[in-house]
Each structure stands twice: as C-alpha cells, then as structure tokens.
Image (tube, rainbow, N blue to C red; front, side):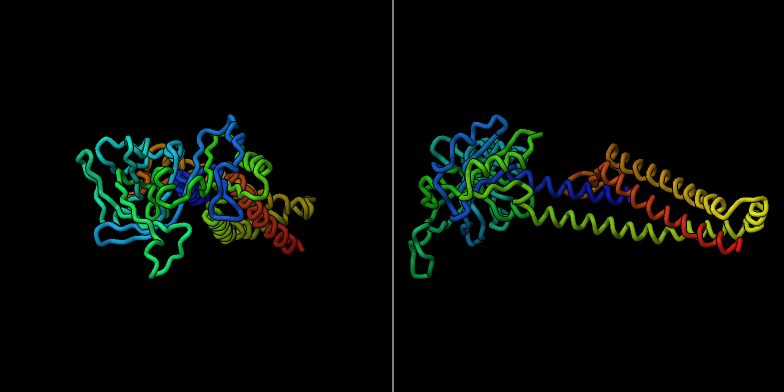
Length: 371
C-alpha cells in the first residue's frame, strides 16, 4: 500500500506540475463578456507586495497555416513579465540563434513562440541561421465582422515569425502560440481590451486568501480563479483515482487478513488442551479471549511494522537512487512522493481491519471451545 500510493502521489504531482507550470496562481476574467477594458481593473490590486509577476493577456482562437498545412490553435498575447511567470527559457526545446526566451521582440520586429506539437503539425522548422525564421500565416477573426464564406473581411491575415518552440504539456503544446501583447491587439483589433489578467504570487502565499481579497476588491463583475479551479477536472479526476486506488488496496488487505484469521483459528485449535487446563485453574472466558486477541494483534503489529518499513525503504531508495527509470518519459526516474497523511491513513486501515480479524476468531472460537 505504501509503495503503490506513494507512486500514485508521484505521478499526480508530476501531472499537476506540468499543468501548473503554464497556469497562473490567479486568473482574472470578466463574467459578462469575453474581453474587458484593462482600465477598469483597479491599479491598487497590483500594489500587493506578495505579487511576484503579473501580465495582461489576450487569448483568441485562430487558424495557422504553413505551406499547405493548416491547424486550429490559440494565440496568447502577453507582456514581458509573463515569460518569467511560466519560466519560458527552461521550457524551450529549440530556438533560433540568439533567442533566449526572455522577450518576444527585437527592435520593431515581433516574434512568436509555438508549442512544439502544433509546430510539428504545421511542418515548421527552426533555423540556426541568425535572422531566419519560419513564417506562419495567422488568420485571426475580426471582432466586428460576422464569419461566413462570403465575407472576406472576417479574418485578418498576419505573417508571424517563429523564434522557438516550447513544451509544457500536451494540451498546451498542441494549441498555443505565445506572441507579444501589442501584436495581439493589432491582429485582433482589441484596442485596450484584454481577455484576462494573470498573477503569480511569491512561494508560500495563501492563494485562497488572495483570491477572496481580490473578489472583494473587484466585485461580482469579475471571475477570480486559482490554478486549481482553472484545471478543476484534472484535480478532481486525480483525487478520485487516488481514493479508488486506496479502496481497492484496502479490499485486497481485507482479503489478506483471512490468513491471520486462519492463523489465530489454528492456534486456538492447537492449544485446545491448554485452554481447558487454564480454564480449570480459574481463567475465565474473558481472560482467554484477551490472550488470543493479543496474539492476533501481535501478528497484525509485526506485519504492519515490517510492511511499513519495507515500503518506506523502497520509496526512499527510489527517491534517492532512482531504481526504476522511465525510458523516454518526461522525467528520468519514476516519480515517488511519500505523504505523512497517507501513512496515517494506511495505519488506520490496517489497524482497523487487523483488529477486527483478531477479535472475531478469539471471541467465537474460545466460547465454543470451553462450552
């Protein structure tokens, strides 16, 4: 149970970190419309000393074209601080000569950075020659135009040089191209409107407390979501899978306790003559029941201590030395995470079931033996 649940914790932590690395701690959006004017967001909310980075964001679904390849995706217009929020340089898989991932423009030239799956689907190529870029054609919908086959003005066409490709998780990698916020305003004709404000806080800050404070400041016209709420389905699915795993392991352990029931039963049958002797010397029924109950608890206790020690040892060796590798995976070694709360939960399950398994045979068989 320790090994399986710790391995599950490791996988859960890895999945959550992959999604959280691209999502902000707090995301502010309009409740009533897709976009809102950046001027209606009170500037004092940015004066919080716990804020590490923040960025206005424009996000829109567009069509990308490269040669004869087409793909739907999203452009995400961001400010320079956003690149620090998502730690872009450490997630770059490939980039053009001189591009480090710390800004999206050079002089008057703007660049885009694409998710690597989307870029592969478009047969894109990152050039090693300075000043050479793959140019994607971006068809972006115009705000005040209706989209139909007869309206040629419904889309704005933009040539976008791609300076690098990044990788966070499949959802992001196959959908997003990050571009500078000014270019997004120009492409989509957004003016001073934005889609969201994304905020990152310092480590250790109570995000839920910050969320409640922002809700009070912004009022009911804005939606304030934490990283958990932005990926609520993933979190809930992960928790549900974990509890299902614990339930199945608990059931397996319950079946395993029949071995202990059999051991206590055989011990009572083997010591039947001794039980009669003790009974004749004055030991009452309760004393005899306690005797064999404590024997069952001793068996259970030795099993718990041995299993817990062995499980924790295996987890420690995996964390320290990486006994099990993940060939071709996102990480080099299979992730393992031991939580104290899980250890107490395992102890509660094993002690409860073990106590029941020790109690029933000692109670029933002793009574039948002396009567």
